[in-house]
Length: 312
Ligand SMILES: Cc1cc2nc3c(=O)[nH]c(=O)nc-3n(C[C@H](O)[C@H](O)[C@H](O)COP(=O)(O)O)c2cc1C
Image (cartoon, rainbow, N blue to C red; front, side, top):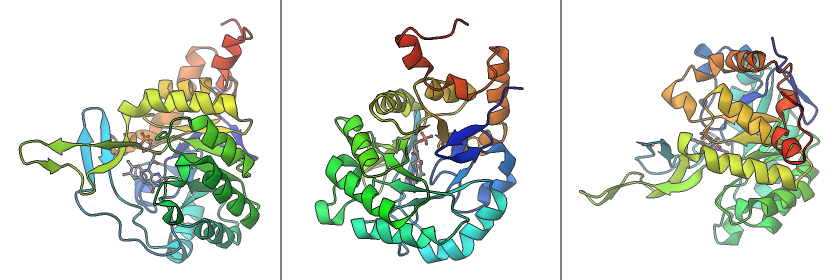
């Protein structure tokens, strides 16, 4: 069987497949459907310092090729996460990555400092798509300077590996990636949802209560793959691919463009047990091609374009 073990910023993953933030329950709801051994690690839903009620209904809508959502960072707050979710997640998953959000640079740093006290948290993922209250509510992910400052604040607050989660809703995602790396990110997660919307033209009603929300799932895969490729070319830190991944072929495409690991989100909504068999499928796919390790697929596209690819 192909070896799927992966080193991600010094973290040992049994396979390169992680759950994506906000798509795998708030806690352990999915553990009954997906054995924890099937995952390389678990990523929490975004946790904020104080509880947040989330956005107005409706918050989700299926589309032809994916999913629209406007959940709006609903969560019970950092202390409830530390008290209730973290001990359970730690007891269940081999690797726990806590995704944090904030509305000021200080909120991100404060959350990171608090989580730094808990060895149960192996890494922190920083959701840069949160609106910046001090910056006209533009997301941190849209401006290199603010993205760098957020990451620098988080870097100063913790010695754990930190990942910046980037958005594709920008002109040049590479610029944000380079800034996050300069701020001290150990790795990058690429990408969060794309801006999208749906409308019922008969009633003149939006499909989401917030009108505009986040688009995810199969339809965004080419965009996510493009972003993962561009970012991988621009930085020297590991990239975790995310966006529209639903099968082993998708995972391998993200590795080929330069990703070290991947996250799977929306595909768990159409098939909640999707992640139970994905690692096994990945092994079988690599075995069928005579590839011994998933790690050697990482960066294959760039090698091939440079003329360094191994002959099949
Ligand atoms: C219902 C829903 C909730 C999400 N919540 C979060 C969240 O709390 N924090 C975050 O960083 N990303 C969140 N995301 C984005 C996903 O983690 C992922 O980046 C995005 O959906 C693209 O991957 P996918 O196409 O595999 O779903 C959410 C996505 C969905 C569909």
